[in-house]
Length: 300
View 1 (tube, rainbow, N blue to C red):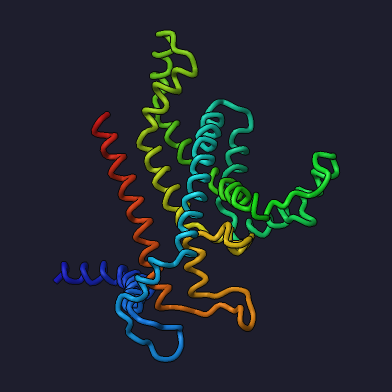
View 2: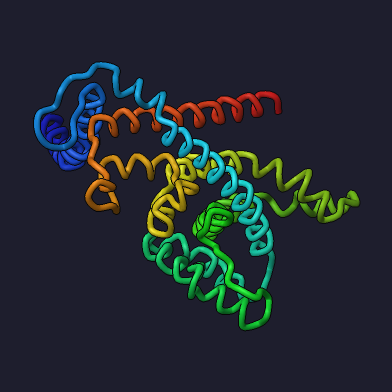
């Protein structure tokens, strides 16, 4: 009897979480899975169309352009944020005066709302009266303002904003990994004549391997799924130059901009198919990286 009471008492704590998971997690996935096979605009009658939505996805050049943009965005973010966060972690792991304050400063962007962060950077990079252009013109670094959010520089700009928001989080993870490396390993290598560069290459990097794999996996997933700052800063423009996969998906469910003939229309059925294909792309890339990292561990 006591066991039954304990079980009921224990499951009563899990019940609210189970309900939330069912309502906010499982049900929306099941709903989207159903409407992948329907022509449904969010109102009126849903018409069954079989695999037509998936056929449309395969021939949707705008979607595949957004996939290419996603890879460019994710690749740029990873190539800049991972080395920079590792460098910052290595510097702040030393007995530097004020290092605790610096750690807090670098970590601060992680706790700031993405939308707020994007609005601030929009005012900085605004092509006409942005703070950065005013600074460059004032100090004669350029004769006219640079179109930071134009076709030529927009992708680089949103990548830099993404790096600014991610570095602090990855730095903290690398810092935790560095602090778990025994100090006597460095002392022994120093006695054997190893310099700082050799210690970093042959001791720090190999012993950071598990943390590095976790950080790269986290960075890949967040970069492939990221779109919030881009939506605020450029809405995918100009001319789709910064439209990434999940921003394109967002617009299918929540149309933005346009009036009259140019207004976008909600497409829940097609959007569900795009969501499935997008999730499949992210899943495949994550599995490939996971498999490759396991193979590297076996080789080591």
